[in-house]
Amino acid sequence: MKYSEHDMYLNPISVGLLLIAIVTLWIYKRRDRAKLPPGPFHIPFIGNPWVLMANPDLRKSLRRLHKQYGDIYRLYVGPKPAVIISGYDAIKEVFVKRGGEFSDRPDSLITNLIAEKHGIMSSSGKLWMEHRKFTLKTLRKFGFGTTNLEGKIDSEVSILLSEIAKQNEQPFNIQHLVQTSVSNVINAMAFGGHFNHDDPKFTKMMKMINENMENIGSNNVALFFPFLRYLPGDMFRVKKTLRNVKYEQGFIGEIIGKHVENFDESKMEDFIDAFLLEMKNNRDQKSSTFTKKQLIRTVSDLFVAGTETTTTTITWAVLYLTAKQDIQARVFREINEIVGTDRVPSLQDKHYLVYTEAFIMEVLRVCNIATVSFPHTCAVDTKLRDFDIPKGTTLLPDIDSVLFDPKIWGDPEEFRPERFIDKKGTLLKPEEFIPFFTGTRNCVGQSLARMELYLFITALVQRLELLPPDGETLDINEIDGVFGVTHKPKPFEIRAIQRKE
Ligand code: HEM
Image (cartoon, rainbow, N blue to C red; front, side):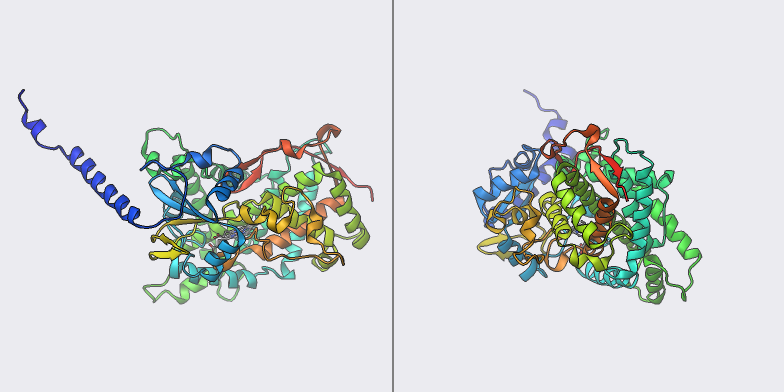
């Protein structure tokens, strides 16, 4: 048999493949030497994505794995290991006591491609630290967690109630209406804006955010195999997601442009103004992190995180109130006794509306919209208990393992607001109640979210009787949750009947 010259020499593709194989084997060898936490069988390069994708309810898969492998175990998402931290003790050990070591964000489609490691959510190290501090300080200045913001939220609640009244007590899906109102609260703080419920540009923007939240959920294999996005077509919706992000950034860029045009140092009215001032004050420093890119990404984080999470929680609350009429009646009774119906519930009433607060906490616990929080990593090779954790490893805090731990809650599967009230009728605040996560990287918007949940939900129950469509009962078990970036209920309809004065 004769060999041609072409057969004798390796062509560039073969050389490339050979090099990739050598590098990958080297990485695997290095990892083999590391003592990673235990975990299920995986195939090199492929990992074991089926262990999470087998059950549409992500929480059920995580509970099974936690039981089998303990508090710290690993999965392989594609070629890379991800370590799951479960149970309150392990979460506290890693993200509170050693929070400084585990507060970076790992490389991923979201952090690298969408956010380009900017903003708050996807940044790490000095950039993250500086901007988390600046954002908290600035948002506090514009009302975060204080009563100054109450009037703004009240006016959005009142617009929401009139939009609901337009439904004429017919079945409707409340999610979109809530989303616009909630978004307008963070918009006011971030860029002093308000959008009408029928504003076409804003509605388009909301639609894109919703699409992205579903597209880049834990069930999208392109998150584990980023190269899939280069395949022709858009089977994994990555291209669509990036197009949506571009639109979103253009939308925010336009708003920033208007702020730049009208910038007046003596009139600081919102987050963008405060950031532009910081940019101006730092313009001589080459290493300043106050850049336009960082501004766009931060506003985008506030906009997306501040809208999606709170909207989803209020939507779950409406679902539970509608499905559990006895609980709705008890919340209404309490509001009626303490506030009456002549004025809207205020933050000053919050302390006395113990059952209502317990109801909101139980919604946050059971619906647990951030099931595995957001990925963390460490900047250097380190150890956790007996295990090696190579730098850059993804660590996922399994919040569900805490909020559904029978050792903490007794009967976690039951929806029972009373669990947050003691014998004397006082509201309990267990340290294991961590829907906003815990430690150095906990939720920046927690105080805003708690204010919004309280003011929106009390006003809805005070003014409206929330009923299933067609007077039938609504079976909560038939409305599954969908796991995208957040855990949200599948679309459902209710009727909202005006309560008689
Ligand atoms: C019910 C509503 C909310 C829930 C349950 C929630 C939950 C969470 C959770 C679990 C994290 C991830 C922590 C981590 O592991 O890194 C987080 C981060 C974050 N949240 Fe929220 N959140 C809510 C509302 C809000 C609101 C209203 C804002 C608006 C300001 C917001 C802004 C953020 C930001 C910017 C981060 C990133 C923090 C960082 O990386 O340092 N969230 N939130």
